[in-house]
Length: 148
View 1 (cartoon, rainbow, N blue to C red):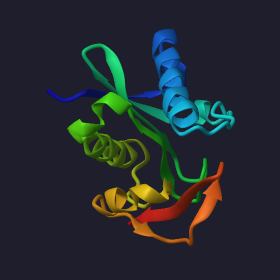
View 2 (view 1 turned 90 degrees about the vertical axis):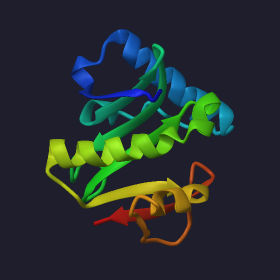
View 3 (view 1 turned 90 degrees about the horizontal axis):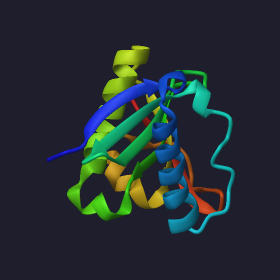
View 4 (view 1 turned 120 degrees about the horizontal axis):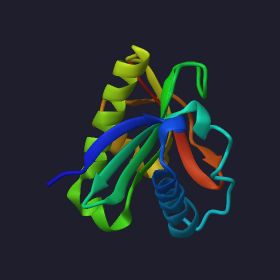
């Protein structure tokens, strides 16, 4: 079995969905990565939200932005697979769904991401190419990557 994916604008997320999203983001980006930062950044209302659920649990998540909302190009961010499910390789499904969502909702194929450096090969396997030197974002090494 794989997660069931849906893409929703912020305004139609249920309270339960929003709670699960914020809980998962905090679990991974704040607790697991031991990084104190402002996850609730005011950009959620501008994003489309990719939700991957498995057996009623949010296990995969990403945000999609139209060109100009975050970067000049469309973008994908806050990419997460719940830790206990990472061995299932669902990150690949999440990125494919996210790329497809950008094409369907924004009519775009050019995508920019700010990727954690350790995931470079993962994103390269989906056609992304490094376009910047390494930089620190919230004390975590990142690189800008683009897909054309």
